[in-house]
Length: 570
Image (cartoon, rainbow, N blue to C red; front, side, top):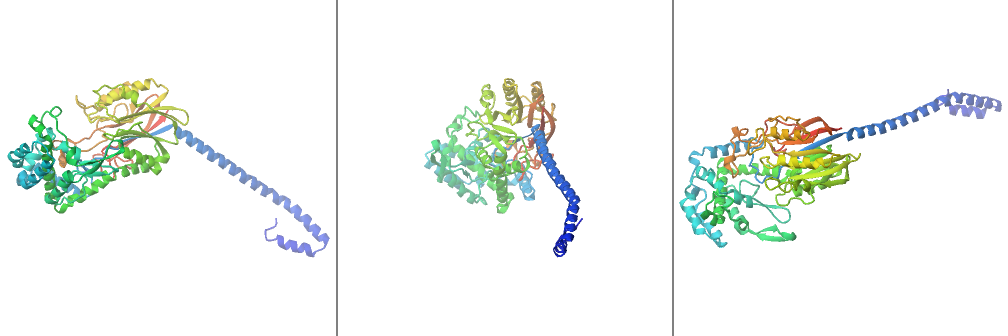
């Protein structure tokens, strides 16, 4: 066989030789070409065959993978937790030693103040009371003389810790917690918030001293009107002090009739004293307002950027899920999720026809576009909610129930639920959902929920064992099996001393005994429809659960862990 370089030389020889020689050469080439053409054709056919079988292999691999994926649901449930206005309310896991020192020093100050337990009048001075009375008088509030008498004879003479912060009667009368609830963080027109100048929210102004704080506080409560969203899309101008309402004895019997009559100015005074005492405490243990640097850092992580961090975890770690149940989502979170580049491309969002606007805590479901047929989505929440009487503590937004088909035509009944604090609504909701499921036997039920169950139940709290007994009797099992381990917690949080309800505060060594460390989060499913392949929990955002770590943390913005399970469709 000729080498590629031989042919030009042979052509030159043909032109120079006689016809006979050239004919002989040509015949030789033709004879030589025949065996050369055969291997080339074989190679060509071999190459085409390889390409064909490779294409078929890739196609079969894709079909096999699609068939395999269609046989498994990767399910996630997460109570992302409503945004907490007070970054200091719960102990968090923080990598900055200054945080732990601050919280321990505050605890020591309040727990054993000693000589630091000074009179209220040394922190919130008579001059400050005089200014406050004038501001309240300008609003023509009744009962100011009675409030002044209460200040002079009682409140001003109390000790700041033992006589005021630790007075359980003030808590029972809601004289500090009620005005805090109304004015702590106010939603304003345009989507922003206004913070009362206090340690227990995200106010970013100067609170490095009592005089600096007091100037800010007076301005906020009485001088600067806020633009608040009104009805029909309008805007109303409101002074925060005018948002305070009477504390009614019919609802809070600890308050006396006389106190009810003057409860607006009385709660305003109590709130001012409370805020002043907290400013005094944190500046005493953290001079130079170092505490406020930590406060603002925590506000960024747990408040201002909470939605951003939550969505980042879902997009980074759980975007391969088939179903994501979420609870306690605010309307702004829902809108942001629907516009998120990764999540919106991979999921469509199931939500109630009307979101809860009052509490702004809604249960929703994200459904994989690659698995489910969005056109078949239908809501059934009202069919379940309609079966409850007033004794069942379920609020609008707590529950979402939908049905949907997958791309293979299989039908599913899906529910996302956030139980009340004591878990007393969980069994009634389960029973009502089961009743609906019985009318839809062709649907496979999957239920993601924060059941708010407890390691040990009582008459006022739902135990996890009793919950398990109920769902097993109905033909369901959980991601944790028929008998969940009561000690396998999905929450671990405890209140600090920097919040209005000191009776609930846990010392650093009481995080377990006084904290919320319980098995609360579950994925329930029909036993005859699915087989559990795996289940995990996560309090890091990285599919890892660190045992005995309080959370939220600066990188994990919820007080509930994420629960995930792989369910094989039968």
